[in-house]
Length: 195
Image (cartoon, rainbow, N blue to C red; front, side):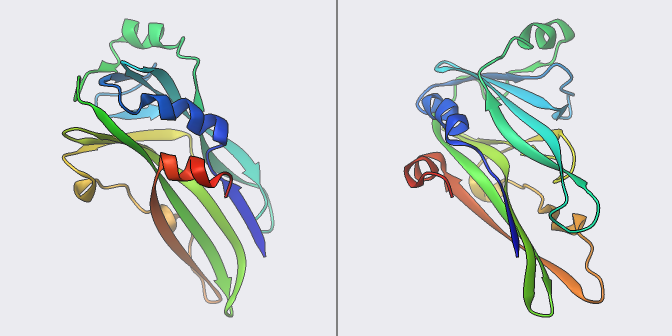
């Protein structure tokens, strides 16, 4: 069985951790649309600093056969693209001044199973969720296979909808796919170390 781990590194999480306790200022992106989609990155600005949440693709053949494209999230402290976002009017101040109570990571595990045997398992972080004093904001991969990011807002965690993209893998007569999802506080991931 092949196991592929596409999760945030400790370095990524250490850039997100200082944002907890600060206040939300805005989010932005060079090409972020009013419908809250961004091809590649979203800048999050808080009173405790700013980070850029990036989605990039890589190729792998873990499913067997030819290479396919998969998306991974990572964090950068280079927010120089904010100048372009401001010039283009792609800065959004929803939920400004709300306190950042916590940061959580949405982690999916997808497996391919044939005749009761697991062929491969992909563990991947699909979203970063900012739990604010009056709302939640999720920055999520639009799919497991593209760079697109999607921002979703809700009044609370129970109302937040982050699509399960397991349907990107097609079952056939012999292989079926299963997925599970965890919502993990950033502090728990940092304490546990690499998984």
